[in-house]
Structures are given as C-alpha cells and as structure tokens.
Image (cartoon, rainbow, N blue to C red; front, top):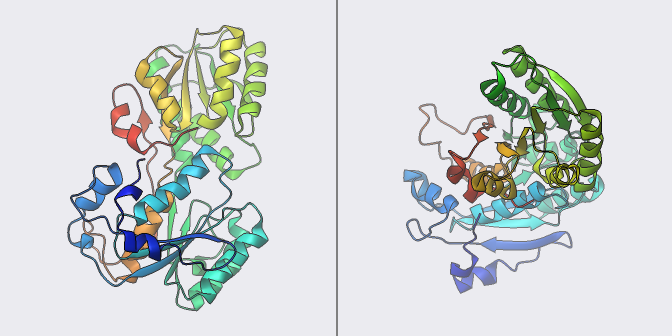
Length: 352
C-alpha cells in the first residue's frame, strides 16, 4: 500500500510530533482531501460519500504486537495510511510489543491522555480484556482487531479476519482444480498447531475438501517463520514422493517453503498460499512458479478499525447499510487470488 506522507501539510506534520508517553512513537494529524490521492485507500475514502465530510477531530490511540512478521508490520502501516486520509483524525501509535504488560501500559497511557478511541490488536486478547474494559467504562470507544477479547464489554466493535473461511476458500479452490481426481494427493503445511487460528484454518480446509471427496494425505505444522517453513516443507517433501497440491497457511513461512521446494527440485504439484503477501501475488502474476493462488487474510483490519472508530466518535453510520450505527462485529472475507484477479488485490498486499 502506498503512503501519502509526502503530500501532508507541514502544520499537520508538526502536530504529529506530539509525544504522549515513552511507549508512543508517533502522533499524526493528517489531511488528504478527497479526490487528490491515487492509492487504494484514498480511492476508498473518495467513494465514501457523506462520511468523507470532516467532523470534530478524533484522537485515536493505536497499539499492536511487534512487527516481527510481514503481515503484522503491514497492519500498523495500513492503520497509519488510513488515518492520513482524514484531516479530522489524530492517530497516536504505541510502539509494537509482544510483552503483554507493555501493551497494557500503552493502553493505560492512552486512557490517561484522554484519547477519544483506542484501536487494539492485542498480543493476547484475554490479557488485554480488563484494561480495554476500563477504557470503555471511561467512555473511550475501543475497537478490537483480529484477536478477540474475552468480554463483550471490552469493545464497541470488533474487526476480524476469517481463519475458517481461509481454509474453506483454499479447499474449495483445490476441489475446483482436482475434484475429478479422487486419488489426488493433498498436502498441508500449517502454522503453529496449538493456536486456534491454525486449527480453524485446517478445519475449514478439511471440510471443503470433504465436499468433493478429497482429504489431506500429508500434513506438517511449521511456525509462521521462514526457517520453520523451510524445515517442515523439506520434511513433507521427503515423506511424500508424489503430491498434486499443497496448501501453505502463511505466505511469510512460504518463503521458506518455496526454498525447500526449489532445493528438492520438485514441481509436479501446484501450491496455494495463505494471508496474501505481495511477494506471492507477484509470483502468481508471473506464472512461472508452483504458486498458483493464495488466500487473503486482510492486513487492512486495523485500517478498518481506524475508520470505524472515527465513525463511532462522530456518530456517523455506515453509508451502505440501511440500519443505523456501526455494527458490533465486522468479519472480512477470505478471497482466493489467482492470475485472473491478482491485479485487484496486489495494491493492498503486504511484503513478506
């Protein structure tokens, strides 16, 4: 996703330097008038009708885990890009951390500084539930992103990806490609097996395959890292001399998976990725790789959280819905990206 930083007004850059505590990296007020930006987010704002009209300034605190993964890095960048589209949003970003206590402290700092709203992608939803509830009790709008709190009182709204839907999308695509071959050998390279998100992805994949009479023949679990992907893919390839298709849950670990495939000199199968990185989409676009498709897990969830926080605070509705008020929950779709539609998704993809 491109940024609009170079077009921001100087006085807004000055305002963005407001320090709000040792954990806060930036505070930015932005102003990108509708119709003057050419990136995907800007086009979305331009098309947003009456909700484009500036209102009272909304100060939003944002906190997310450390950017130690391409997808996670893109989460924060997309939130900042989105905030820069609005002249009435002041986004204050806490330093990313995988330390639960530091993230709780960041939220407490936002509360003490009197922000209007907080957008949180918690490292651990359960651990951040109490402090998020405290913020809500003090009248601060909390938008929960990706990893859910354990109490409905901890957030005004929640933005989620669809892990089960990712599996369904990957399995359905494989059924379309291999459904006439009941003996097709399907392999799966999962993420961390103990995580509910991995379990949901695998269950959706198995359920979709079952609909066309297929099943997973060979499965390994990696850890969302390049190294883990390469090691587990090498193990998988050694155990399965013939494969027709592989679903790899995560495009970051897919960098290692592809390295293992190249090292093994194997290309008798096609592969479907997961999450939707730009690297993978470019390989799909070029058409000279085993990578034939990937399933999107949107890295724009926090950007959506910023938009929802602004709407709630300005008491605006979602224009295209008949019902009033921002919904309590928004779950994003998990589309399959192939060579036929990659141009539609590449601009909002993240770099692995």
